[in-house]
Image 1: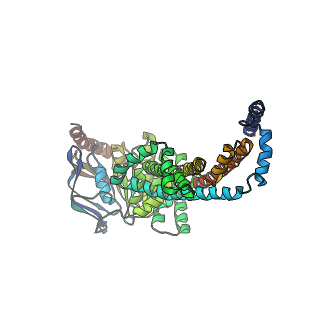
Image 2 (image 1 turned 90 degrees about the vertical axis):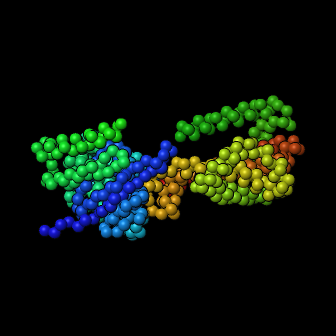
Image 3 (image 1 turned 180 degrees about the vertical axis):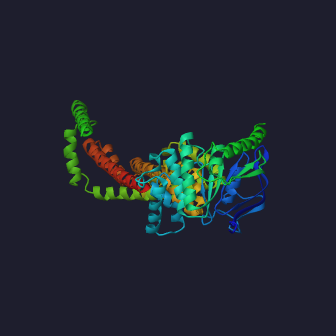
Length: 259
Length: 248
């Protein structure tokens, strides 16, 4: 068996933001590699720079020092050919129907109307949005909106899916169901997912690897491997033990972040 | 149907009151509808004012010119103020202050600069129509959700694509509303300009009839002007509905 190819390399990246009360160091010397097909979760206290790191992978934020390689090439700006981003706010275009929203990335990529229509239509089933093609975002629930946003990301068929707290604004039940749904999608499409979350449950339920980040300035505190099979039972002794360990690490950092 | 019935009822009441009051008042100042109808007929048959078509055409041309200028300048100015931080900060408040001045105070100087003919009317219609377009662009730009711009950029959109695919559709509703208001105000500007000082155009005819105390002709001319204004607004509302459909 050959080892999966390394797809993402974050190499000693640092980033400072200039605010009115002086510079704030968001990330300090962060290094991380992710292999193809992994589901890698970034978890850490608020303001630890997880979203900044994800923004850098997506080319929306530039590192101050260090570099980021995706598919062996440095990231210089948004490149939907390599990575598709899903944000916490679904950010659907209210004047577009569900189908047209899913088609958005394909449209920008210059794909022909018939082709993008057939790709988007084929996605509606797995998205659980059959029969909603012609609906507008305002007619959808929060979970459905986020599924449309994920569909928009899947439609362009990039290898990497960057997800910035995609279920953070949903209620607990919807969140759990969306996690199960995403797991199914991920296992079918074999995308490489980088997933930012606050939720221990989400991280343990979904990830092949969890990177815990420290309080600001964000660094990688530890990386946990999760070799267990899917779907996982949160009551299994392995996960219960892992959960305790993970909580211990995050608790420490969250306490620091609160001070 | 009920709306139409109520509307017709209101119209009948108003006409009835008008008829009663008009008959009881000084016939030089007030004319009942029964006297307006013959005047309107004479007007439309070109008996009282044979040059009516030429004047209507002139007024329409002035409105078209004033509106076109207002739209072009308003869009350019609005986008410049909205997109350019420095220009927006420097001139935005000045523009808002200018808008607060009753526009009619500028009219005497417009007549001095542009003369008594069409140019001063176009300038006045332009002045009235310009502000709503500019302000609608500014309001529209503020309405664009910045997150949608981020999303579009994440999908590889450059500035032009962001403008065409995100800004314009997000602004469209506000923008079209401003364009409609601007048309109504350009019409007002041109006609007020003609009434205040002109030899030709609908406003000039109105002024003429009024000055000679030909009150029935005056009212008939006002009715024709009303038809013009309502007609232009109907056209504008059709465009607005079309834009809304495109928007969806």
